[in-house]
Amino acid sequence: AAGVIQSPRHLIKEKRETATLKCYPIPRHDTVYWYQQGPGQDPQFLISFYEKMQSDKGSIPDRFSAQQFSDYHSELNMSSLELGDSALYFCASSLGQGFQETQYFGPGTRLLVL
Amino acid sequence: AQSVTQLDSHVSVSEGTPVLLRCNYSSSYSPSLFWYVQHPNKGLQLLLKYTSAATLVKGINGFEAEFKKSETSFHLTKPSAHMSDAAEYFCVVSSQAGTALIFGKGTTLSVSS
Image 1 (cartoon, rainbow over the protein chains, first blue to last red):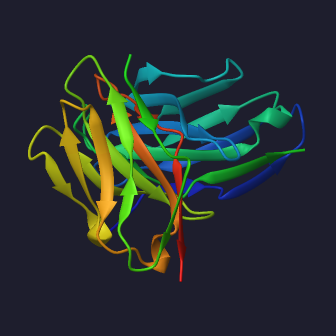
Image 2: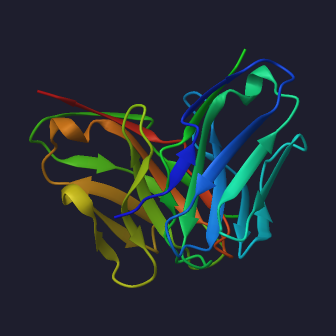
């Protein structure tokens, strides 16, 4: 079965640079979520989109922005990167939005900021 | 606000012995609860979920969990551990609107031969 696709899988950036992470949800899934997992930490919710509209916002820095496109893929844009942004970034998708829906996670993008 | 507390940061078992990973939740509404597993350098895989149907939920790889409202618990169990079960396990609650997941701090399961 098709899964959530994230690209790139690994990314190395310098401080103050920008990065763009991409997420392609499972076909027919209309909801996308972004999470950040720091080293040895639990995943923290950043932001979510349903039908191309932002549906919720968590602990996402103002330096980050995201959007969902007409084909339902999503991009997380990160500017003025800091060392503390080094983390594993997960994208998840679901069919519909609701507390009973299951979120299926992608393999993650590992970002290293030097 | 909703939250989950995983009572053990690390659990060690021998292969073939039972596994118990404990999780308590706090929620102002009837929650959806999940267990996800993360193997080293891998993504998050859903083990099982509870969404107000049967209180005993069976998942993949022989895992199951029981929702106990009176104890606000959702413990994960497996009758017999396998070496391949060694991983990080997260107890997770959904936000009321379903727009986000709130993760526990995780429990590292070690399995020795």
